[in-house]
Image (cartoon, rainbow, N blue to C red; front, side, top):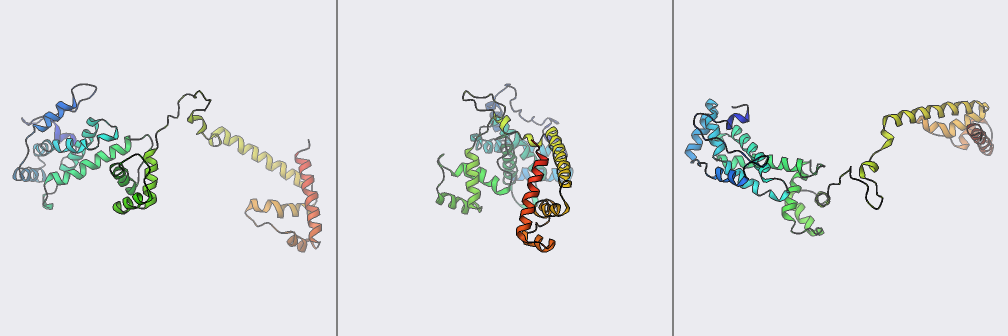
Length: 298
């Protein structure tokens, strides 16, 4: 089988060259479509002979004839997706890629005409192109989301929000969850926002500023880590100013959770230190007061 898809469309031995899609303003999509519609169609017998030549002998001339005879199918399918705001020529180009993939994989033993097999590949390439280019942010990535993206646009008659019954019916028809229908409806109703636009007249900051998270900025992370280390050193020095019993109470009540340990209750410490729970509380209050004075002398 041919390895390079472009091999199929290179002019060879008198075969008609593949019509070129307009680019950079040269030519027009109408002239391309006119040329495509003039390409000869194949009978079932001719199609079978060409497919056999391609399968057995890797005959690129046969592959080219199969592609050229089905370009009009791509144009017809691409026309169905013009409502997505993408250039018709781009849709056709992607559909042509799908057609060439179909020709490369066409299996005569399946007992179907090439057009029936190619439709799947043509639509798959167009769908992928639309999903990548319809929004700056990817709007559909899972299989249910892809199914909803295309079906919701065609099944939703107005821009109004869908009723619960509409959502339930569409979810049942497409074999997806109702919440997935609601989520896709919200996504389709949204719009892209330019993140580097200038501040508006009301003083609102551009999204690029309020979307940024300075906490993850490298220099800020290093600064935060250094500050935390200094605080820990100060805390250890402050703890050293306490007597052993006060250190034990503060550690068991306040520092243990930071070490993923359970803090002890006043009664636990009272039993351990052989004093009353009230006396533990008094020592704790006095120790915390002393720590604050050491850590914040002013």
